[in-house]
Length: 429
Image (cartoon, rainbow, N blue to C red; front, side, top):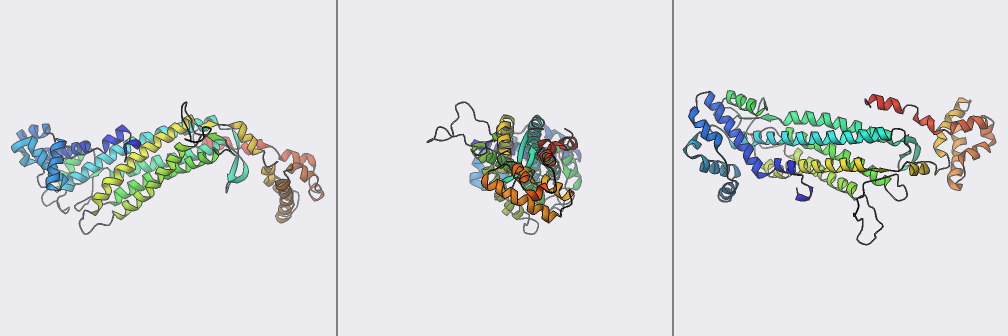
């Protein structure tokens, strides 16, 4: 991922330096396990624990060897000397690479969990703030019935909480290690070593593996991140629509000194939300690639490796950035209740059409008869921009069934707020 969208902590997780550190951590844990079993002399452990890998030496060796892990082992040997003969005993490269990758995926998931927690907290705060802020609900982009801006945000909050549970589950799924040898038979490294290593690293043991960990785990991880990104796109798209000049019910933060256009100084564009939507598109491709990586030849091939070097870091880095950015957007979101009320009244009371329909049905009309009566008046109100209530009161067929006072009582926005508290209570708010 380009530096523009890379936050420092997540960037460090996916840096080459940290990869080398995690590889070394796994190798040391294996040596400690072998020492417990008497295969490696205890006096060899201290030099091994102190060993370091010079990134420049590693890069130099890789240019020669065209194998990054063998280059790592050579750079480690440069640091360690004769004790290096005890390193990588009985292992294949992916015992170390996949186990270390699991450590990094867990680290990345920890950061994303905190990102989600902060975003959910910001959404919850704004939902409470606008619990009773009346606005128009839209279906197909067209005015439907009144709702509240707080209710709109509770839907986001509920979705984010599901993502928190999904991320916790997928973190558990990828937090596994494998130290099982060339094709997973444990022929050169017994299961006891694997168990000791994983316990040291705080990982579960993969019950079975071949030369690599099964890639359905990693595909599930990417799919979870893609779902979160899709929700962020959904939320950002809503704000983009609400920020349109003709609507202008909410607006993303616009800071002092910020500009919106090189040509038009008046512009205040929803560029942050557009950035969220653009980055979300990447995740569809990441997901397809992760699914393609599940099918490897026999006990393993290396077709997944090149793709994972891109999609795993990029997905984590991009989502970390998107979650942080959207948290800032939510916290600084400008909400305009007065404009919401203006827009609510644009259709001259048409938002109450269902209430009138139901009242006429209760008065004895069939649903089809009532629908026809209400719709014909609604269409006149729509075309001629005349108050819907006045038209209904002038319609003798309507007035034959219901009084003016009864009709007027139906045109009450508070009717739509009756159960807002219930939704908030269900979410523990």
